[in-house]
Image 1 (cartoon, rainbow, N blue to C red):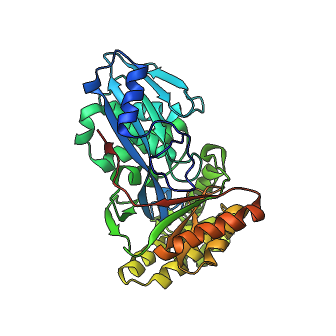
Image 2: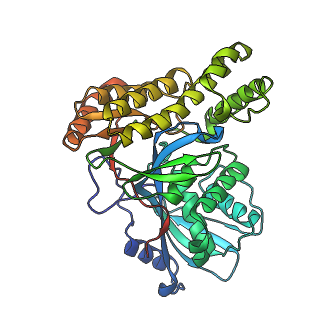
Image 3: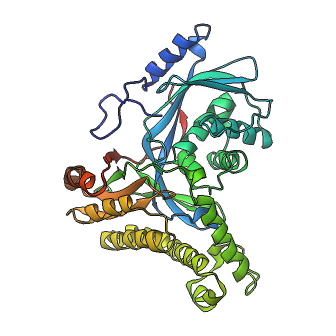
Length: 404
């Protein structure tokens, strides 16, 4: 789902469909002439970019994402029945389901909405039928959590006014349950957490074991630039679930040595080095990435606190190498984007971001280098890969809620 934004920056994919609140409201009222204009609610839920902490969330480690100002938006009106009907404004596709019918998943975008409805019901929340329209300026399958944004927008729509009374972290956990238990993707909490709890101009440090979190101010003299490789990813069709199973296999083996080990969060570098011989070679590489990545997240926080941007860049680079060589989820396209960014003066840090197997890189860039980076990537990347990149100049944003 992609949409136009008035004044959209170069590089954003534009389809010319309604996206502003008044446009979404008008699109809904045009499709549903019986709707009361005063009853229409417009909801936004942001995507996210992860600065560092990749695949650590489901290993109960640390993550450092930021919600971004690329988002899913819905205009909805509650109905008196139990039917959910939504129209995608980019394709015109209309789809729906009954809240009480136990709709089987079919691999479509509607799974994420039905899964959220299922999880809300499982958690004991009352939901309402609705009609609405949905649009987004998030590229799909890019590693920017468009699915989590759909889930959070759906949760706000289904809960109605009661959504404002639900703790944002609790709502994120409900949406994660929908993705795990209904959609079938064994994702961690990071994506839904960032979309629900985001804070403008801040990243979010989340401890995925205790669920303690805090906002971390981003340097005012740096810009966030996301480079989309043009190579899409499909999470449930990738090796994502396999990576999680490999991490669980490492935990099962290491717990025989130390029964206190419940996740890779509990494994120290020293213990892994001493007991590595017990692990399958591939499983050992996966564990090595997770153990080191948790340490990198905390090190990045320390470096940001100390304004040590050189260290931040080194930690991003080490994280990318680990994802490429140990977790094996990078791609030639992502590697090319990182190499090009590393060659531009003023790019402080660059690495792949998201679940992997295609998608995007995240870059921390000095303001006067943003356009240089864009020009270099747009000039050189197609020749290296045969693909067209998309440059997204993004800002850290607030979490999901009502626009109008």
